[in-house]
Length: 495
Length: 98
Image (cartoon, rainbow over all chains, first blue to last red):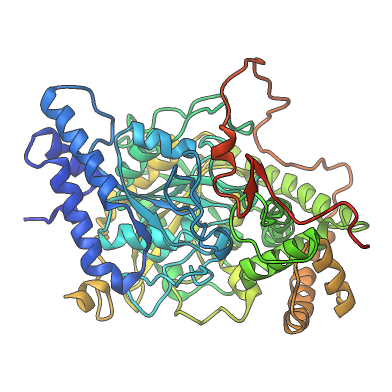
């Protein structure tokens, strides 16, 4: 019999609806699994077992009484520690927010609680979501369940490690330049960055406000679609929230790809640094789409090569502005200083890690007198050209495909001393972040080292239904097993 | 773009970061490399191209001006490192030596 911790969210919902299992039993099984194996992974910054069991007991009571429950009733879920949770520590992976307890819930958290998803804990992340390996957490690195010597990707590294390990079937990540998609690819999971503005940013601790977007992480496409429906929707508390609702996602999931036009991004598949194993699995997946009836063509995004450059001006600029709020006054750390300025400078020096300081410095420089036009404004004009490239490609194609990342999961410590090499891991995910359009990663197989490879699927703004439909068709055809395996995997080491 | 240590110290002052000498040295090289890479955006011809900050055509966002409860002062200052009488407490600002 499949243990409860390897069931999909939808599988758990069926068991709960048939009363074959209670929500308390489901949650306890996941909490036990976390207690037994998270010592090897460090996916969680904190586990909220008591609150989780209390919420589960309430769900059970309502099921028994025939009272209404939400669409995710009884399903365990983990939250990236960038989302504000009322009364529960929210650190963003930073010393500057160590032991900070927000006075309110993020809108996403409120929606998920209303859907009766059971929050079991907060997951580790690169400090303030800046990083691609989870090694920039101020507390500890998280390890990849497929190979404990490798990174899970980042910045949503704790969320993907938890889902891949079976600690939870669902988790929330956030994506600014690839922070959901790249870690999903590194751990054999489905990770979706929705259209910018479809998921409220209220209570999502800001990194780069014009790019940040929360999204679902799951082991199946159907689970991801279900979670995205529950978390999205207009929010008057976020002025960048799109008034239009996301179209229904679940109705068309099984419609197949026959007759759909799929564009292969030429520049991405031809990149020098692309690993052979990644290229092989992605090429095979594209061949399968053609076999399944899709019309596969080659397309070009000529300005995408400037994506990383534009991103590393726009994101640090917005970060330097957003992170000015950590000044030792209203929350978080305060260090002594004889004047207000000395207090602030000492607090920020002690509270921020190396990568966060680096990005604050880049952004402050790019926005400083005399440089604004050459840097931030020019990067935003390049952003417009990237948007136009996508628009032209989508005139011919319903979706675009590429590798999610140029490599599979790398070893801990491999890239920490070379910031620019780390940044280039996001080369394929950044363009759709700049375009604000939806993109996702789907696992399409393992490379010769037994590590997962992700296919990126990109769609026009608010076209999540067709993106997920393509993903579901390919998932069903490939039959990828998301259970981590291999000599150095959690499954072997913890056994 | 190659930055001097004075440039790095100036930016650190603007950013309110009391960097150590070692950090200033390390950042000088790293920022120069990263900015050299980022400056590639300058190769793109962008005359008459408008900037994009939001891909969806949202303009001014209005809501009705209706009073609603806000965070009580006690909760607002609960996470502050120093507070007094429902207010944030900070080191002296006025009269600071410049």
